[in-house]
Length: 268
Image 1 (cartoon, rainbow, N blue to C red):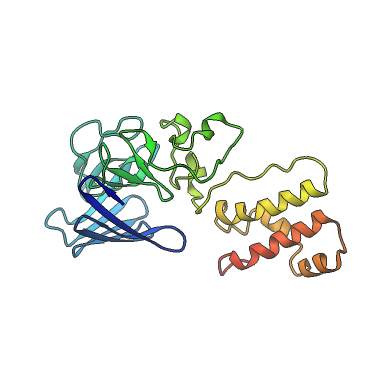
Image 2 (image 1 turned 180 degrees about the vertical axis):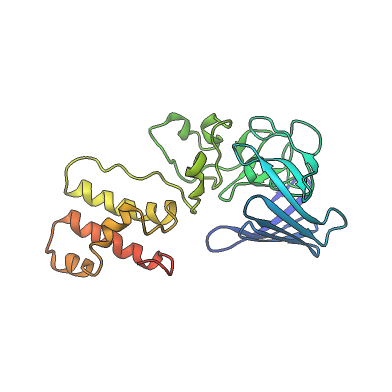
C-alpha cells in the first residue's frame, strides 16, 4: 500500500486478521485485538475496557476506556479513576475536538486508527476493509451485499447504510447494533429465509444455513438450529448415498456433516 510519501505493508493470518504491519519505519505486531507490540512497548487489552501499557516512554500502567453506545473510546481514566483524556467524534468518526489520546489507537467504534496512513485523518482498520472517517466512506468496495433488498446496501463504499449514530461495522462486511455485533465471524450474513414449501427451497435453506451458523453464531452448539441438525448426525452418509429420504432431509444431514468438524472442541 503506497500513498503520498507513506509506504505500508500488512500481514494477515488465515482468518484475514491483521497480525503485523509496517508503516514507514515502524513495525507493529497484533494478536487477536488483545495484544500489541511496537518497538519494545506492549499494550494488552482486557475484558471490561482495561488496558495495561508497559515499555513506553511515559503513561505506563493500567488505564480504563469508557465507551459510548457504539463502543467508541470516549474517556480514558487511570486506575485511580482520574480522567486522563477525552475523545470526541463527528457522526462518521472524524475528530471533533483536539488531538486523540495516544494511550490507545482503538478509537471510533473501538476500531484501530492508523493516523500514519493517507487520508484526511488516517484510516481505520475494519478487518475486511479500511475506512476513511473524514470521507465517511470505505476505501474499497464491499465484497458482499448483505441485504440486496435494501437500496442503501447496494452502495458498496457506504458506511453502515448511512446511519452511523445507530450502527457499527466491526467486520467491514455489514452493519450491526447492540448484541448483534457480538457475533463477529469473518463474514457476518443474516440468516437465509426459509421460504415456503419443501423440495429445493428447503434444500437450499439448509445448505445456506451452514456457513451462517459457522460465521454468525460463532459455533454456538446450543442454538436451536444446530440442535435440529444434530438429530441427523451419523446418518448423513446413509441419507445421501442411499437416498433414503427426500432432498430436504439429505440437505439437513449434509449441513450438519459440514458443520461438525468446525465446532469448538467442547462441541457435540
